Length: 253
Image (tube, rainbow, N blue to C red):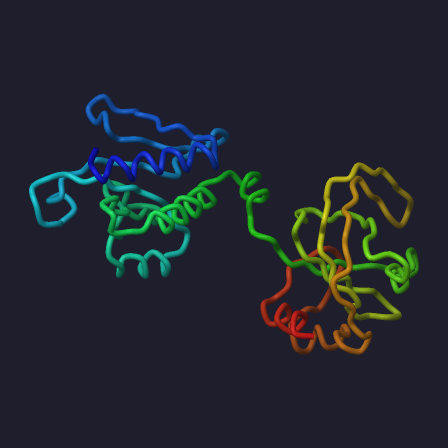
């Protein structure tokens, strides 16, 4: 068996095990071309092709397998093209497609990472939200309606209103509104989508999340005035992402 065939076999096994994908052979004229695509939106996230070396601008008269994957960053694509084993997307010039030589030049570990990236880039918005890396949020809390200041006095883990987009594994920094007006806690989200229905004139909830205390901050450390003057945060009315500079400051305390 050729080295290319061995790499193909490893790729087939990887996408089957991780994503449940089977290679699809769509062209009678090109029986060795194999496509991998999402079940929901049917978009491709990989295409293996058997291509003449001369068509790739490479020396030799034979053929080689390549894997086309998609990236979402032009600068990253340009960086890859400076490395051995990476070429501009063969017959897929639009949309930041990259061709990877499957002749052993690129390690299998790196090929798997590129498949994962392409899968994320081409996923539907709903699936992308589920498979995205952990995210950091600022979550507001109003002490008029809940004694958040003392919420972790006796418990390390509590239930909290789940904000849209928050997933298990995310980090939430709880900002306590006036009269405190400061971030007091860093918590890890350990569970989401806990069924719960509640509504009054001040608050409405349809689901809860479970959050575990990771760190406490003194009220004077991350005041609203500091968030505004140093980190450009002028309001905390609902769950929101945080800038890198604030993330680093919070983690270094």
